Amino acid sequence: MRTVGIIAEYNPFHRGHAHHLAEAKARTGADAAVAVMSGFFTQRGDAAILPPRVRAEAALRCGADAVFLLPALWSVRDAEHFALAGVSLLDRLGCDAISFGVERDDLPMLQSAASILEDEPEAFREELRGALDKGLPHPQAVAEAADVMIPGAAAVLREPNNTLAVCYLRALRRLNSAMTPVPVPRLGGYRQTRLDPEHPSATSVRLALWEGREDEAMTALPDAAAALFSDALSEGRVQPRDALDLPLRARLLTMTPEEWEALPGCSEGIQDRLRKAARRAAPREAILALAGTRRYTHARLDRMLTHALLGVTQADCEAAPLPPAACLLGLNGNAAPVLRRAQENGLPVIGKAADWKPWQDAPWARIEERAADLWAVGCGKPAGMLFTGKVIR
Image (cartoon, rainbow, N blue to C red; front, side, top):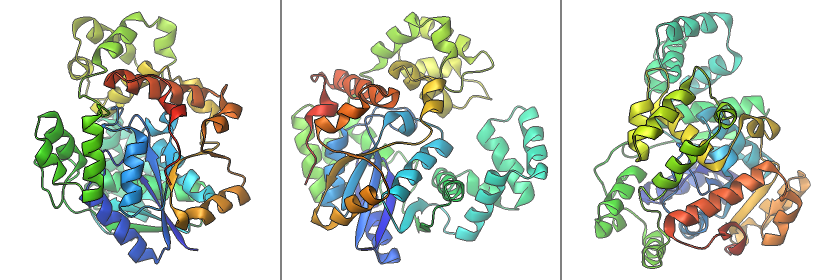
């Protein structure tokens, strides 16, 4: 059986995601699509709008054949490490190809950029140092340095899906993976806030929901996904926009200097700016606005706040650079060979609650339990969500 892997957030699952699944299968000739999906918190640090199992079931009803969780230790990371963790899981799950959305369908250009960023020749490093010395944020400095080496690369690397695509290609090189990369052009803009029912962005769907335009939000979802979303709304399993702002501020105000310094990526005194901002403002966005600098992007600070909330440290990241197990959220009958390949590759699969027992003392598993419980706090639901759900079949 031929399988194609996808790394996603499905936050929430909309028509564009269904299109990508269909195109990924068609372009690769795959019999099954395997998704590795962010769990309770997303790559930028936000709490997901729906719990993982609801989003996984939506994907399974709309074209996916198996969905695995990407735990918070790896889902709330910069693009490079987010991609590396997801690719490693897909590779050990035995996928033959990996498909990803792009703004520009130019695989040779993306591969050239990935080669430069992964190998970092001396000429590139010199250009990067010069760009950073000008005070540019790291992503912009990388784009400018790459553009000197590969004319046109800056325009490619300024687009979010292209940036992730380059990171997936870098991960394939770093892991020596044989998966075939298959880009699929994105329909509609990643950042667009106006909801286009046919070519929506997840941002626009979330905004519509938070602004009380529930009927409009549903028009952007496939019927099967809309039915699940509607049920989650009626049951109170949808994360309010600012629900975790107060727990976050309480955490920031009570952290010790040692806890601040232990955060991933903490340097140049940024912890002092965040701490001072937390004393002056309560909403998360206000804290970010006060603490932001040209060097520290909004997304980077956003992840730092979530790391603080979840108690993630740099030591945790270094202790587990890649996921040691695959957390199964759901599958259909077509995906049984995927589990066999995982077993053949020595990848443990966590399904039922008892499967978590061997990992109960692992920092990444404790972080995931905290992520689930904090997500439940935001919705006013009982703790223990990580262990109470069943594998969707």
